[in-house]
Image (tube, rainbow, N blue to C red; front, side):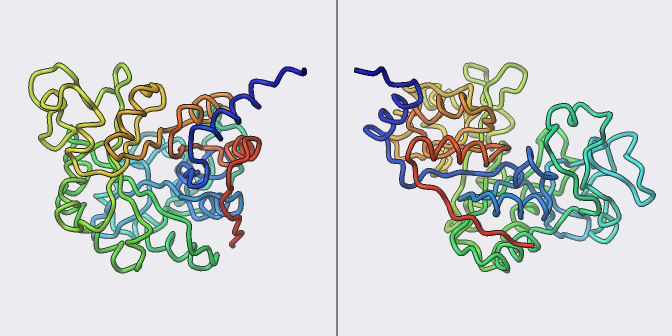
Length: 328
């Protein structure tokens, strides 16, 4: 009898234990490994590859427009000014610019001298890309004709730097209004490491599903198990009031999905989260072997910079693939 490959064994294990039909393939910042992040070109690339969810980040401008950007301050690694020069230092902050002032910056190419260029050598530049409004992303999807793809929208706000964004309440109100105006509320989830915005949005819009982002890696810990008082990231919730259990903390928040750092996951934690009725969608996994290991934990989805790689892994395991919908 021929021995099965590790991939085949993994596929059989997944098929026998886990549900593959609703696996959530999320393109991180669109498809950051392939196209400029958080741009219309990047989201179009993700739609063409075929994802079930567009993962993206947002901020709010000085004049209250919700725009799509990972960085609170304009990032020199991929931002050029009106003269075509890469910024020398971070800034200005999005909250200090009107939407029209923000539109002069080009975010379609990585600075070749930056570490980001080495991290994403396959990203194809698209010169002239601007920081889009959230409304522009919704409109792009409408043009694609894809009536099922979802949007996982992160609020980029940091409790340690209140001057760099609008307040949590203003952020939640602006985001809810932008989602309502699009008519996309049923296809949106809102995620954040800063649970203040999640708790406020949950009160303002209980019909919009929440996703709890967590990170317990050294130097990045937003949970602070065993430390006195609540973490400033958690909106006055304290993990130690829930026995140090992050899944129970997520349940207390009222989120339906837990999105942890992939290295924080264990089979026991996935099982605990599922027993509490939570979906588990870790971030951000880019290597096929790591994708296979994560899928073997019976997670519900995966966030990746390379949706094409994840599709290939899913296809090899006989998992259902989301539709491909090219759009200009």
